Length: 238
Image 1 (cartoon, rainbow, N blue to C red):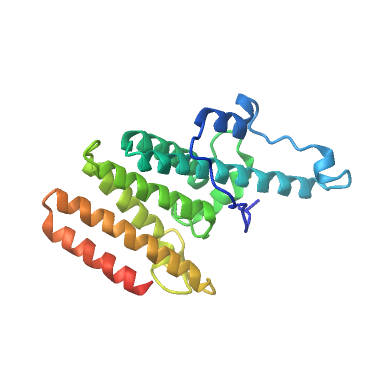
Image 2 (cartoon, rainbow, N blue to C red):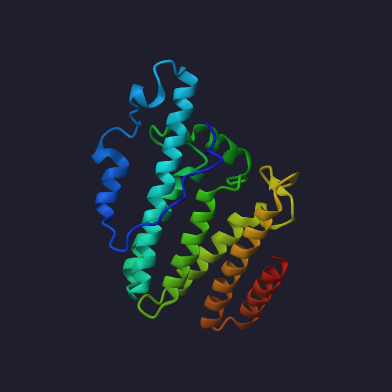
């Protein structure tokens, strides 16, 4: 089943987040990753197809909420100037989120199967704009920022997260109302909401700013100027 069109993105994580408790709650204390659904929750007359859809939607929602809580935990660490701790939390969020964007199924995460077929057919690119995908890009950019801090001083990793974000945004940030698809992104899918392009360009502008800042710190002035100029242009397009 494909990712749900709408996810429950309401509410935020508390400031003092217990990551281990959150993971235990999300994953059932190490039990089977298949989500148990009580009959009374879905109704005795629910068909197998409806039940499968319900389980898939719940799985996507749990994945989103897990990544969102880890992101907020990282944000809280940043507010306390604990950048190494924030980086670890952001990195964990990316690891969880990444399973949704693997080209080939791993383990028994059946809810990912259809999505991974789509990913494989598009050269490893996500071509469906979703809250989870936006969250992944936001976390990457936050991690890139952490790597630039004096406490970490890992400029190459900052560049890696920024360039990965720019690459992943390409299907959505190239043309308004269009998403690029195909193994070489050589096809165009029209009728995409304008809001997708605007959100993608906003994230692209931030990614280019992170990239330019990192290049500048390395003394790579020519590339830094190009990246920062592209960031300004992307902001103007938004």
